[in-house]
Amino acid sequence: MLDAAAVAALVRGFHDPSDGEALKSQELVLMLLDRSPAPFSRDQFTHGHITATGLVVAPDGESLLLVLHRRLDRWLLPGGHIEPEDATAGDAARREVLEETGVTLAPDPAPPLAGIDVHGIPNRRKEPYHLHHDLLFFFHAVSTDLRVSPESREVLWCPPGDFDRYALPVSVRRAYRRVLSTE
Image 1 (cartoon, rainbow, N blue to C red):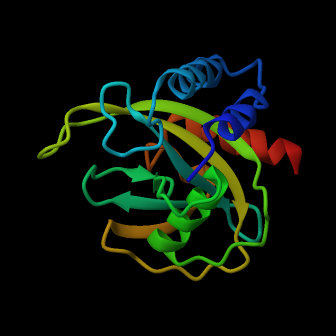
Image 2 (cartoon, helix red, strand yellow):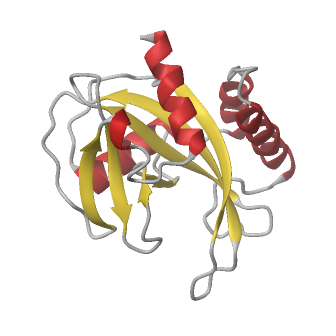
């Protein structure tokens, strides 16, 4: 099971003074980690829970991996809930990317934190409206081969010129620019 203190240290290390939304999300994530007895539990709805997402760049560095989420009917980065077997939040993001897209990722034992985004998830069946405190990890793909999982309707590589077409959130666009500037 993940260590909340290690995740808090990772989140504290994120710094982009030009991105006020990410900094506010950082503050909310740190509060959740400090005050919740189960910040990684998908059954924690009152304050939400930590999730992990992969910001995956194509081998040529020109496109971003997206999934058309079946339930939310929106184009998103691949990602999801942290499982008890995930040693780190980065491992959770890597596992989610592989499960949802089948893409082969370059080895990276400690993928960098590319962004932080707290956002609402609509109610569904037994789950009330709640917050996902999402940690976005940066990965490089080593191939462009993809597959669609049962959680998605479609998977594709999206060049920046199509970000508007797929209605990518501002937080994802900022994270993408952030990783490109560090390359």
